[in-house]
Amino acid sequence: MKRLKIAVLFGGCSPEYSVSLQSAAAVLQNMDSSKYEAVMVGIPCALSCNHGRSEEHTSELQSRQVI
Image 1: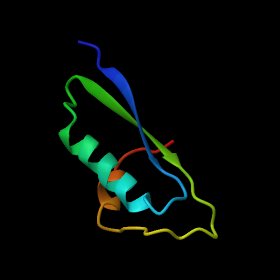
Image 2: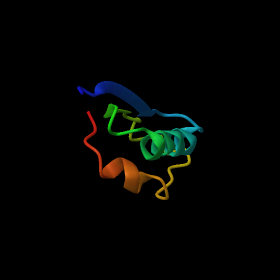
Image 3: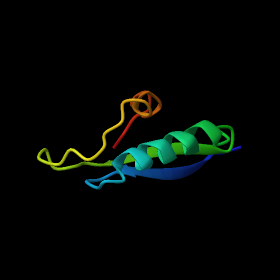
Image 4: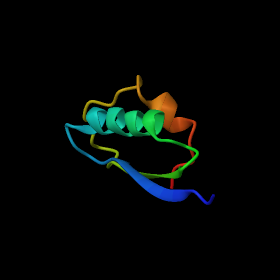
């Protein structure tokens, strides 16, 4: 059976940056990979913006291909 592609958006320059990473990681961990193919879409943050970046949840995201 063909898997449905699902875009998982995360990132952006916001005080909620770490929440975005946590949410994306939770989606990836709980998505049924036999039914869905995750397409990671990272929204970049301006270099001058450093809102609450969390290394804790980036490992799950780093192991995926991000466009």
